[in-house]
Length: 113
Length: 113
Image (tube, rainbow over all chains, first blue to last red; front, side):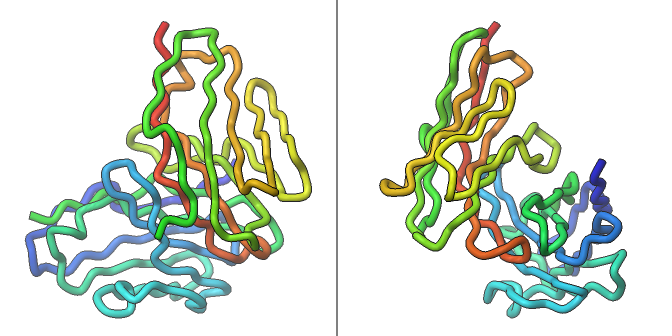
């Protein structure tokens, strides 16, 4: 079974603090995606990596986030200065480019106070 | 501008009934449509998917009906069970596996025993 791991599961930060969350993609998957989900609503695409290189990202990520995949087995998503509206569930998924299915991790739930 | 729309936002059916979840999209380049099931506290999991070359896809109690001309699709869950209570996301993607998936806002399904 596919298994994408995300750590930590829960994260509490004060406004203005930095936050970092990690994702271990499914072994052998070269495509990694990050999504933001608020209140169990739609998943908002944040950034996409292919072979550890960022190929697509939204403006918000460029401006306030930091995202890297230093190895094929580890990716991280950071928020430089947390704001209240960043409170959300951050989901990581991985897939093979030749396959359709994206496998999701359980997410990191961030609360910014 | 929401590219993938879902209705209803929430749906309650009795155990044994058929639940019908609707989805529509804007972008005619979308060619792959997965439906994800998400339980509270978990990441989404692929339930069933269809490609635009097909008009129907069946997997057990779950069936997707696809109308390419009208850019609409629906998920039918027959013989609904309480364990089916979850949020269901319709999603769409253009291109191949390495492209981002666009998600709808979800339908929260409750199956009452």
